[in-house]
Every structure is written in structure tokens, then in C-alpha cells.
Image (cartoon, rainbow, N blue to C red; front, side, top):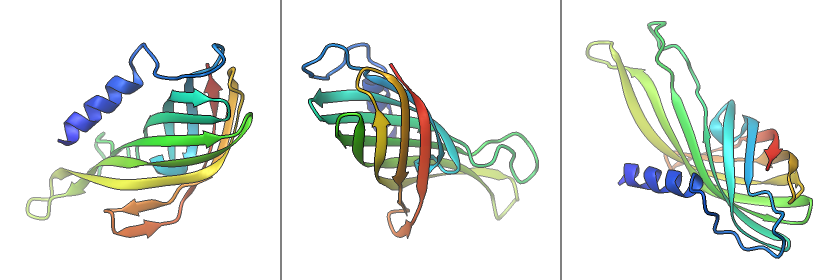
Length: 169
């Protein structure tokens, strides 16, 4: 079930046809940005695509990738992987209010307690965001800052925030 969800998200994000509706044909519907802290841990690279846009209201889907440790506890290349997926809503013209909800897929290395060999463990955490975004609908520089709390294991609430800079086209 998890893999089917991930396949659907990738198909939607990377399809060539957009589902957006707008009164202007000059809307930038793709965003690429770097985020420091935020839903991808300490830093992530993200892609976002417009799914719906009308006047001041916009809905997007976001997917990113990040890592926490590159080397495992035996100093071998074995990176932890973090992939955040989210649905975002924006309201505003160039200065936007952002709201988002999603899941963060984590695949992390732990030491197996019986033989002390590296073992991968997968977790899903709920991610939220509320913040500010500067972005022109016609494209160009994107700047955002957001409060991005993470609900780890869907039980523990962790306060978190992030700043992003990127480009829309």
C-alpha cells in the first residue's frame, strides 16, 4: 500500500499535463528550491507542481529528498533517506500565506541488537506547515519561511521551522 501511494505521487508530480486552471496562461507551474531545516530534516532539495490556480488561490503538490547521516555507525557509505510529500495551499498575489499537510518517509539505518549489523527501518511522520512565501505567478525567485511542526510516529509533536530559496518556471 505504501509503495502504491509513492508511485501515484510521482506520476502526478512528473506528468507532462497539468491539472491547473487559471485565468492567465503565463503561470509558472514548476518550482525547485532548497530548504534549510523544514520538513526534510536539516536540509532538502524540493520540487513542487501547481495542481490548481485561480486568482489568488493556488494548490500544489510537493516532493523532496534529504539525508540525515551519509555514513552508518561502521563508517560505511549507507545514507539515511528522508522523502517529504505534501499538499500545499497558498493565498495571495506575490506575497502568499502558505498552509500544508503531508507525510515524510524516512528510511534510517540502525544497529541490529543481535548481531550489530546495519538494519534499515522505515517510518512515516506527519508534516504540517504554515508560513509566508514570496513568489510571482509568472516565474522567478521563490523565497519562503515556515513553521513546520512534525508529528513523529503520529504521537510526538516536534516544533520545527524552515527557510527556502529557489526558482519557479
